[in-house]
Length: 235
Image (cartoon, rainbow, N blue to C red):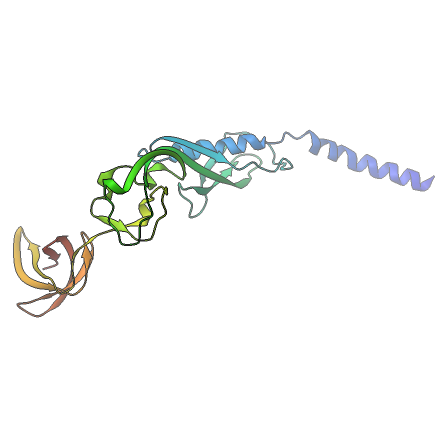
């Protein structure tokens, strides 16, 4: 009898609190996912082309976060940015005050250039090497080569298979100044431009930094490649 009474007292103490916890409104996991997707869509660069599909990972149905009394706030996770796979922090800033990381994937359906045949590293591509095809790619479309103009002055930094969409990261700018080449050094100050003969001590693409030697003073300086025959240096 005493044992039964003790059990009854314990139940009387525990159950009211448990009932209150069960009655507490729970945040819909689907709403958290929608908040993450809406944020990424707002942050998608205006230069994105084609049809962009943003999908937040399905959250565990056992997630029991208290319902937020204010609209959810979303932002990039530390170090995250729009990409094929990214992460968003969704936060409740009032009342319950919780936060959760939501993985998000981005895919785009867009017209991109693909290779007709395998191409080796270092090769510059022409219209004869590529064709346009509408495909679904990971990430945003601006990460891929879409027009022939984007191939001008660039070469492959890696070998690529036939049929492969061409990410911009596979390409590097062509070197337009070569080691040992005679160039014109240009220095500007107070509206005055001074020119001097120089020699490149390394290869450089346009707007890339390169070491050069002033052939008049024999001084070695660093400048920025302006074009195939000129390097801009500090006075």
